[in-house]
Length: 137
Image (cartoon, rainbow, N blue to C red; front, side, top):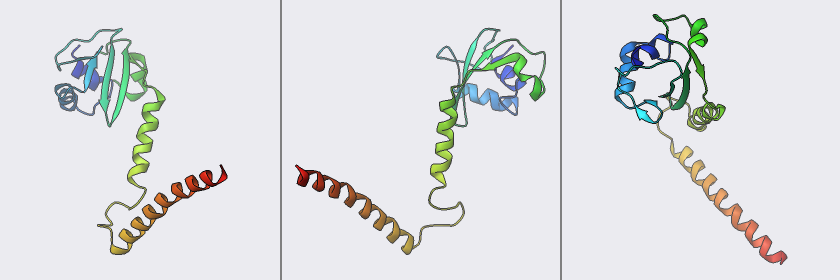
């Protein structure tokens, strides 16, 4: 079965054209080899798929006849993706939301002053600790 059709059948992509575009952009690999959408895949192959900033590692167990239901996906593939990849995704999500909510616009003058004050205080603290260490010697 073609790799783009396989990824669509096991529900890694919503449409087959999305799977085809991912292959064309080099986001689908087989043993560090970039795959074309028409490349045939077989049971036992290990695919690496980059989607949503996560590198999924999949092992093909069997080839489906057509698109399968979400509950049956585990019959055809095994997900070997390490948990660290998902934890990194969570960190990215939190890092974007730490300061301002989406849609609140540009920072105000007060926001800018608060940011500058925070950076000034953060840069002063390490120097104070260094001076205390030198005095104790």
